[in-house]
Length: 247
Ligand SMILES: [Zn+2]
Image 1: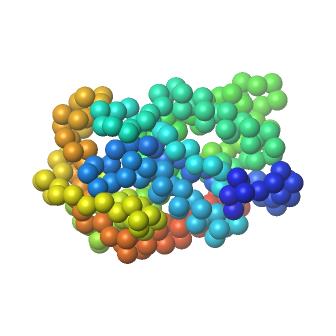
Image 2 (image 1 turned 135 degrees about the horizontal axis):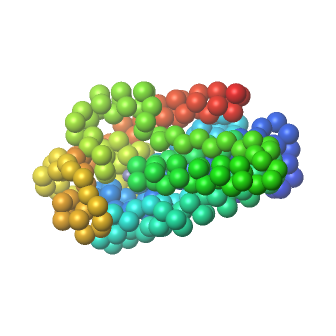
């Protein structure tokens, strides 16, 4: 159930039965020669909507721009500074908390968002701890990366082994191919498996990873694998969402 497709009266009724909401968050950044710029936002959004349908949970509008400064040397990438993203996340949570939402389940599609999301949660809790009324009702935030659960990891390993890599992975590319089969791209990847390494800023990143990928062979992606990854992710995350909001 998408928040955007409800009326305020429907949200009021929803809040009588549930205090939870799923917030997909991704990124708008290069994903190598065959990965879409919107990969991280698309993955978070389609899985969040699948979980929302399975769990009868509201899904907030996708936060499609994240913390991606290291990808800025590639055209089409957009980023927020960590401080901007923290401020935005705090305003989003406090807006919904005002209406009675208490459980904020961030479904993340981008590894580069993790540190900033954790800092945003600390900022939100600090604001509530420092306020005279304390944290009442108790707001709780949870971060889950769609790929970081046992079932999805096992499937990615079975499908791609070490060619999964860490950026522009065949798993995330496959998921976007399943979601948007009309936007499947092809290109020669040279070398097939991209180099590994660490990075600092955008110039450093581009000098080490010239086509944008890290450690991955995106060309192994297929829409059929994307369907399997989607189903595994929705099942695992639905379980996690339901047990967290019940507790
Ligand atoms: Zn990605």
